[in-house]
Image (cartoon, rainbow, N blue to C red; front, top):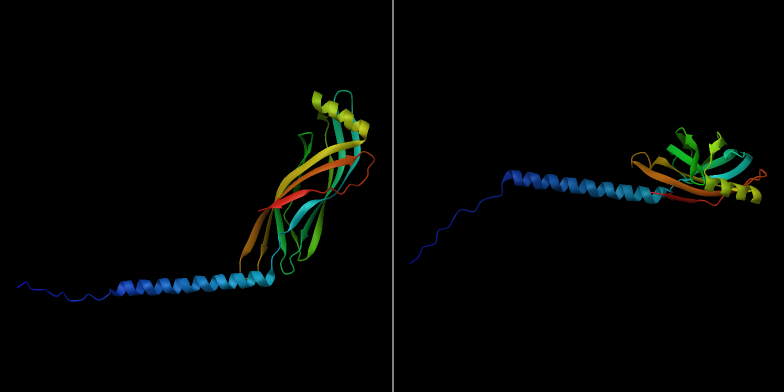
Length: 199
C-alpha cells in the first residue's frame, strides 16, 4: 500500500513580512501625498500666466535706392499673472523680430517676477541697423510704402515658474509667442491680436 509522506509546513520568511510591511507604508505615503497635492490644487486653482504683444508702433522708416532698410519701432510686451495666491517668475525670455523672414532684432529680458493677480509691461525700443534687402523683399517693401503699412512678425519663448503653496512644489511652463503686426507708417499705435500657446 503506497505511503504518503507529510512534509512540515514552511512558515513565511521574516524578511518577506518586513518587505511587505515597508511596501504598504510607501503605498500609504504616496496616496496621502497625492491627496494633499490634489486638495491643494483645488484650493489654489493655478492659472497659466500670459505673455503677449500688448501694443506696437512704427516710428520711423528709412529706405534708400540701394535696397537698405532701417526701422524704429516701439513694442510693448505684457506679462500677466492671474493667480490669486502665487507669484510667477519669468525667465529665458527671448523674442525675435522679423521683416519678410529677415531677423532684424532680438528682444530679451532679464528674469523678472510678476506678483499675484498683477501684470507687468516690457517696453522695447527697436532701432535696426541698415538691413540689405533682396530683390523680392525690395519689391514687397515698395508695395508696403505705397500702402503706408509695413508687416512685422514677432516670435519667441519664455519660461515661467510658480509655486503651488509652500510645500506642494512648483509648476513650470514654456510660453510661446507668434505675432503678426501690420504697422502703419504714421506712428499709429496698434494693439495686435496675437496667438500664444503654453506647455
